[in-house]
Length: 529
Image (tube, rainbow, N blue to C red; front, side):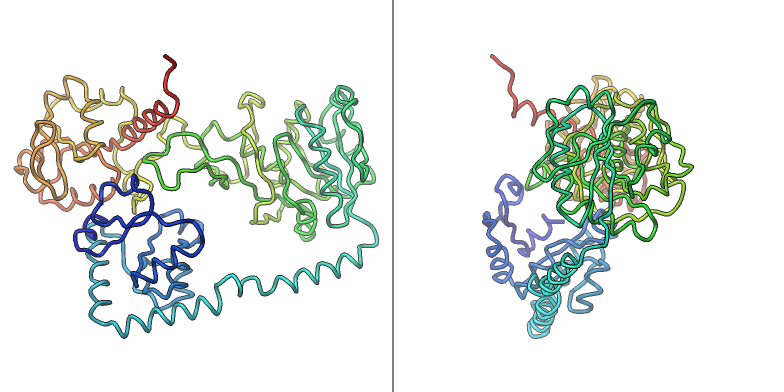
């Protein structure tokens, strides 16, 4: 899609030169991250493109580019997104992206042509979008209520509750106990709370020399054995609510006070949290390539190796009034097991409040061997098998569900599953094609006829480079095509629109991504001489 736009002289790319080295004719250089330069560039070019990944729609979050374009007074070309349609209505030029890369590029170029042939109307649309942004969506407008909210908060604090909410906080596990107690002291100063740390007796004895209370003081109660709901409820005598702070969890400012307010209706709440970005290979590098903390996805999308981390976050976000614990059954081999199984047990027993704004962070992943069995979250799908690549197509693929509809090649041994007869063609004339070519077993390479590309013809690695339409129909009907590029869904659409369908289609993007990730690791950490 971008190449087609570049060839039509309708594309200006900014960013790192390495990122856009394959489109030098459209590359305009880097822009500083100063909050102004990107707005100036959008204003200079007069129009801009705002497209969304499936993740944007899944979470209802628009691409932030739409705000930059509106602020710049540029004409906005965008695919359909509920947020954009709601706020900007017909002051945006919309395109459909369900036809693949080529059709999407053609629709974008149609919009560009309309803008160039209707400058007055286009300027009016840009001005209207800019006005909507300035009146409703700029930071000045979004932050207008803040002084009033702060004043109301100050008034509430000047008229505290007749009695502070007394929260017992279970501290399971053996790590960073002193730091967790300091964290509780910070929470105590917010929201008119009275806090008591509930610490297993064995742990309390082992760490007694390091547990001097902080400057504001903190009540500590010892938890006797055996670990379980009955022992816990006995320790909660005179306490209003229970929270859990496992090791490796950081509570944000106001976490407990927010949970206490959220739980007033249902008597229980579990706060949203964020965890470290996965370290698994994710495919072609993206820009900027920086580690991010992310909210966990739905349970069915969490690999087996991260199920414990998900349970850990739910335990760190747990809060309930003590009366909700009556009759609650939760597995309790030890205090940590109980802490991890209380959240799903509470969710099974009744309604919960689930505040959407994250108020805690998992700083590091727990060792997966700590708890052999975890209670499933009510209604959660079974997690996907861990023997699955982290990504089946490039991060910018417009239709990843379509890409997941064909078999994939991920590890070198997967190539042995290729059909033993019939011609092979590699669809991909870039680095991906080279990597898959080099990975083919000797027997398969003898049947490799050449490379395919949607537009190019010629030669590659001494073999023919053709377009799919160039293949003889009989050859196509007997061929296994191995997709060796990152836009898997677009290639699938191209092949399925042909007059003759290939015998088989296999997706080698996971293998390419794994190879690239391995090469990047070797470059970052070269072997010692």
